[in-house]
Length: 112
View 1 (spheres, rainbow, N blue to C red):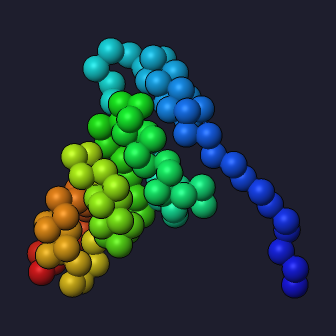
View 2 (cartoon, helix red, strand yellow):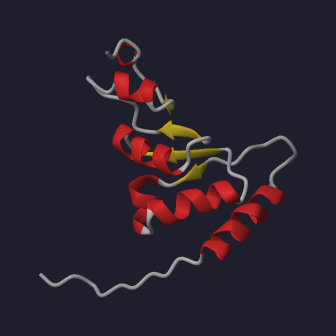
C-alpha cells in the first residue's frame, strides 16, 4: 500500500519561541518537561532536543533507554527522563548515561 506523501519542516527558532511562550504561561517555579520521544514525534531528535534546551528546557523526555542514550549525546547537561522505564539489562546503561527512569514496579529498581 502506498503511504501518504508528507513533508514537514522544522524551524528551530519557532520551536524555541513556542517553548519560551509556553514556559511564560506556567506559574513561577513550574518546569515544563519537553517530550521528544519517538525521534521527536518523527521531527528529528537531533534538531528538536538541542533547540528545546537552548530555549530553556531543563528536562527532556524520551521513550526508551536507547533514545535516552542518543539524547544524552545531543544534550550532555540536561535531565533526560525515560518514560517507558527500563527493562532487564538496561540498568547499567541508564546509570552510565545519567538517565532518570520512570518506575512503576519494584522489580524495575533491581535491574542490573
